[in-house]
Amino acid sequence: MRKLAAGNWKMNGTRASLSEVEAINAALDDTDPAVVICPPASLLIPAYDIGGKIGIGAQDCHMASSGAHTGDISASQIADTGATYVIVGHSERRTDHGETNDMIKAKAQAAHEAGLMAIICIGETLTEREAGETLAVLGKQMSGSVPDGATSQNTVIAYEPVWAIGTGLVPTLDQIDEAHRFMRAELLATLDEDAQHISLLYGGSVKGSNADDIFSVPDVDGALVGGASLSAHDFVPIIKALSRA
Ligand code: PEP
Image (cartoon, rainbow, N blue to C red; front, side):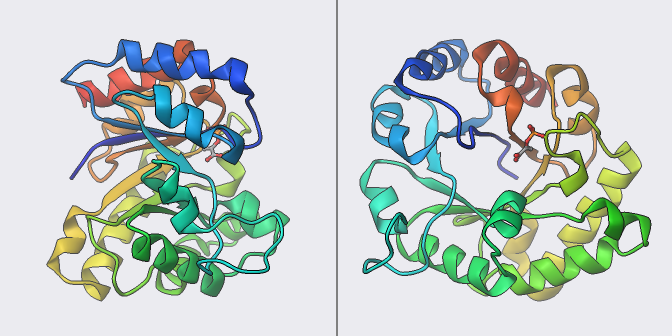
């Protein structure tokens, strides 16, 4: 599995923040895993221009390739910036914009058609976890939002418990292990044997202080990081922990 540390800047950052991209790039060496930063759309081009070894990704794409969709950005437009990744189905998009599994699958397909790596996010709410529905929810999100054409060359899946995003709460290692084993088994049951090579990221309050533990879980191939990806000071220790794993 390809190890990947991906940063989701959400609606944070202006051109002044590009110095953090430069500092993260400067800290990378040949032993480090793949690193991707997903800045807001306004920074895709300048981040790509100075990104060096860092891959650049967008945080969402439209499912159509062009047309009358004010405020949206298509996968091919993202690819045109030099970016090579796009996050789809983040829980904040599912909640704030009512995105459904069907929409997310169509967005992932659009990403694939544009030659982008889709980072497809799934994860349960606290209510669902407390009701014992976590694996059922993950199964439904996977079958609903991962397209048939998903391979290790075009897809990464991020397990992000909604209750762990931006809260400082982190599942136990056993809970992460259970979710990631389940996701791997689902991929193997529904896709061909290449599915075993699809990278599975954990996301939700990852920090330098908990990264070593999280990366010790067998089917965790990396992390999708929100708040701690905004600065080199916080993100580089996570990248280095993934190098050690
Ligand atoms: C995220 O938004 O994808 C995320 C994981 O955020 P945080 O690391 O801040 O919890």
